[in-house]
Structures are given as C-alpha cells and as structure tokens.
Length: 205
Image (tube, rainbow, N blue to C red; front, side, top):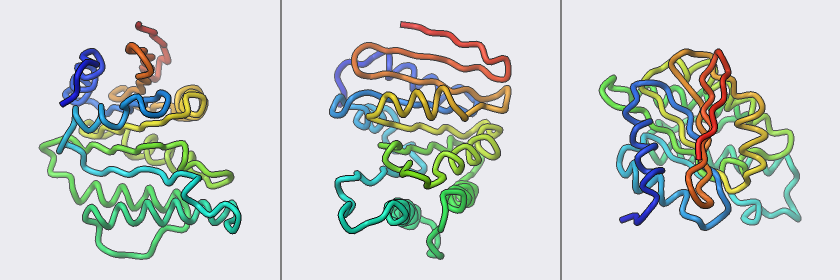
C-alpha cells in the first residue's frame, strides 16, 4: 500500500472519473515511485500496459538503430498478445503498432468502464528515426482523444523528453472533451493543464 502522495493519488482518481478523454504524463527521476504510484492507484483497472525496453538491454554493439526500433516494436507486439490480442504479424512501424492497439482496445470496449492505457518508460520507445511520436500522435489525435472513456497514462524518467516531445511539441488535443496533464513526482505535485482548443495553460503547485 502506498504511503503519502495523497495529492497525486486524488488527482489521478479524479481524472479517471472525469468522464472525459484524459492524457496524463507522469515524469520524474528514476526510482521515485512513478510506476508504483500508477499501479497502486489503478490496480486492476489498466486495460493495456507496456514498458519500453531499456537501451542497456539491447545489444548496442551488434544492433543498428533500425534494429533498436524492431526490438521495441517486437516487444510492444508481445505485450499485446500476452494481454489478449489474437496472434498476428508483428508491426513494421509505430503507426501499425498503434493501429493494432486501437483494434485491441475496441475489442475490449464494453462501453461501461474506462479503457486505461499505461505506457511506462515511454522515452525508450522513441528510438532515433523510429517514427514513434508520429504513431503516438496519430493514436491520440485521430482516435483516442474523442472517446470519453479513454485514459492514456505515460511515465518517463526523462523530464526533458516528456516536456519537449509530449507537452511542448506535437500532442495537440483536438477535442473539447480531452486534455493533457503533466505531473512531476520528483517531490511535490506539479501540474500543467492544457485545455484545447483554446490552449490556455495553468500551473499549480
């Protein structure tokens, strides 16, 4: 059972019950309990979960950048199959991988509960020239953000990656019913809310 982090726990629970599409980015240095926080708050509510492969776990001496991407895609495909997707051909791109995730979630959707997707150590999936962000943006902007029962939670130990690639760059929420929230769990709660399309920013300590 988690001790402390009452503000973060309450915020995550409130977002889960919001009735809107939610994109939550949780970031902070390694070993501060980001993954544990998500697991404790949502427990059995996670529809699909996946963690990126550490670069250390990939044979960097014998693997090209292209092979790094292939290993990440293969691992993502394995997560889908282990959590109930019918066996099929592994994706060749992140666009294909997220299309597979969409189909998987549509099969799981009973219209009664949240579809909660948890992507952990997301920065490791974004290998050089992999097109990961293109796939993620297409998944969120074209499919997930307009579904009121979808909640996407991403975790990362690279603050700069989260702020640059997720918060400041391309994930422009295209719906009045969705928002992007970043939570820093290094210490106390730090949140930036993006309510699109008006694009107002609010910072709360």
